[in-house]
Amino acid sequence: MSQFAEQTQKQFAELEASHERMKALTASMDKIVKTLQEGHAQLNKASEETNKILNIVFEEQNHRKRDSDCLDQDINKLFNVYHNMKPQPQGHVIDNPYNRDDIKPDAMLVSKA
Image (cartoon, rainbow, N blue to C red; front, top):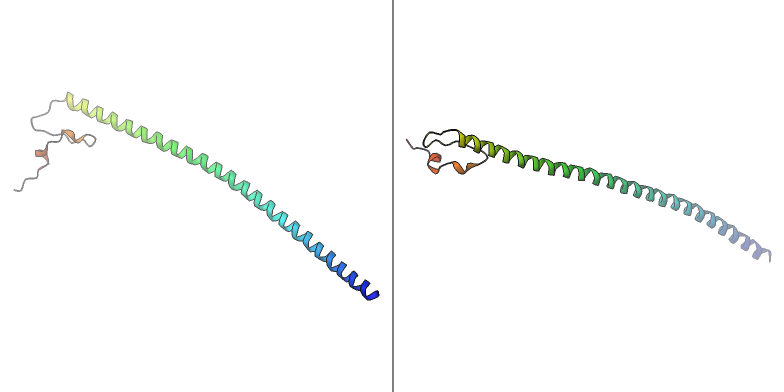
């Protein structure tokens, strides 16, 4: 029986050592899971902040586009008012970069002299 008792004690010691290794492994895995959860939370927060910044940038771009469009319209209106108020010599063409409808095709021809 003493050999049986020794084997049982040896197996029990191995089982206890295995149990301790499993506890250490479980603790390590718990730390990894906690670190991953914290990292995930930080990524979510960073993503939310990035989305807020992108929304502000897109909103600013839309405002600038609207402002630019309004400015182009205002410049075109002012040019048309100026053009209509100022008497022009016959055949004279004013180059308006915003509204090219008033350019006559003959004015665009280049003479081959």
